[in-house]
Image (cartoon, rainbow, N blue to C red):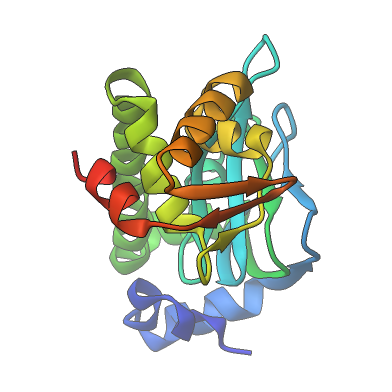
Amino acid sequence: MDWTEHFTGLSRLEPDVRRELVARSRVVSFPAGSTIFAPGKSNDSLLLLITGTVRVQQTSDSGREIVLFRVQAGDSCVMTTASLLGHHDHSAEGIAETGVTAAAIPRAVFDDLLGSSAGFRRFVFDAYGRRMADLFLTIEEIAFRRVDIRLAQRLLHLARDGHLKATHAQLATELGTAREVVSRQLAEFQRRGWVELSRGDIRLTERAGLEELATA
C-alpha cells in the first residue's frame, strides 16, 4: 500500500524516497475510543493519519481537561513529531474519535530521512509550523476570548443536522473551562431560544442567534 499518496508533501517526494518510506514503515489501525499515546509514554514512531480523527488533549494537575487540537486524515501529529525531535516522552494524550488508520514511521527512518531528504524535512517542519500556529491560537482564545463566543462557535462547528451529542463536561473539555461555566452558558442560550437541551443532546433551534454571537 503506497500510503504516501494521502499526504500532499510526501506525494511529491522523489520515487526512491517514497519507496523507502513505504518499505521501512508500517500501517497501523486503532478502533474508536483507543488511547493512541499518553503523557509520560515513550515514542518510537511518527504517526501520519491516513483515515479517521484523533483528538489531542491535556489534563492539568487539578484534573481539568482541554482539547488542544484534532488530527485529521492527511495530517501528521505534532505531538509525535515533537517527541521525536526532542527525544522526550509524550506530553499529551491522543484519543481515536473514530476508527483510525495511520502510517507509523520508525524513529530510525525519521532521523535518516530528516537528514538526507530536503523534501521530507520540508514536509515535517511545514506541518509542525502549521500546528504550532493552531496551538497559539487555542491559547489566545482561552486567555482572551469570551466563553459564550467560543461556545457558540464550537456548537456550530460540531453540530450535525442541527444536533450535537455531547455532555456539558465534554464541551468544557473542548473549551478548556469548567463544566459549571458551560452549563450556565447553555442555559442562557436555551433561554434565548437558540438551543434545546436534553440529557447528552443539544439541538440548535436558531442558528442565526448563535452565528451572530460567534462572529462578535
